[in-house]
Image 1 (cartoon, rainbow, N blue to C red):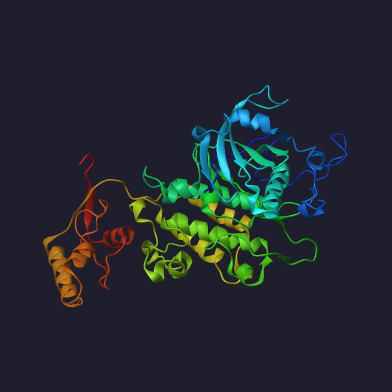
Image 2: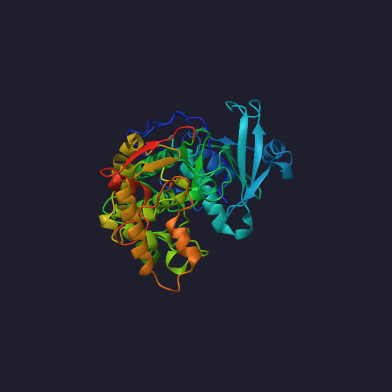
Length: 449
């Protein structure tokens, strides 16, 4: 489960279009000179022996607040059930409220507090420390903003600004409030792409390593925030081409070359972005065991359709009811196709992805919402009837009447009027059918029908 939080601590947010530079967190205090680069995570002393005092000194220039256990216990009403938000791999998450009198410079606000379960051994502590370290230095509008942390005895907590809109995963796959609109999906995709581009172009670069729908958080305006940096790694530097590391991440999102070799590059994140972009197009999870065997892996099933505009409708989320830009969908599909290349060198950079996707936000070639009546001449009506009759004769005899009925008359209210068949007998996508019949059919929209 993802954390319903965004984060906000002190420090100015970097402009998204500027070169992403991170502060060096000095051990010499606030008066030490600042550098355009940051400390690499590997430069820390052994994480197992790093004391709270060492961590506080290391993070002295980060504006993070070091909370006590008692302060966070009070903020959550003793970690009450009423404030419990859920539980993920990190541990339980609670909603809390901090007062501006609690710490100097702290703003009174609602927060989300992740409480590390230390039963997992040292790996959990390493991931907690990585998140504190990276988010203590990184500042960008599309990254979660860490307010502070607690490192006291056996207590390890992270404190973020509360984000009430939750994760992309919940809205895309678990929402009971209707489908995310097309433009909202593309806004989320562009924001996530900008967050990754910022990480990859930092000094030294950062590889996110766990990009997935549950780690994308949204504010009330559906602005994107990348969260959970526990698996983040410093990227290759100098003459290095990759970082070799133990394979970690989430099944269905990890790049194939990373799974096979453990070689990690920025292009590994690009592949994961392609998976999430495909989820946004299709409204399907990357792996879904409830579907037919050949459709259980979304990438394997959908990728061949992405470069075929005439077949793209097979991939698009039916919940959108064709209310999306055809041009925009084609652009997004091609971007996803390239991101999902088996060859990492063939994948675009995230800066190139941002450049390709941003124009989609201005594409408004939508078809009008509402019921439609297609006015077709008697001669055309006879032709359609003849085509249906021919198709019925060539259908397999074992195909049930219910299946045939369902194919002829789609359930969506957008498919009103008559059914338009393509030459191969497959029901055409609404947008393709409308374009094909514009030359021969007149149609009008009945408003208020």
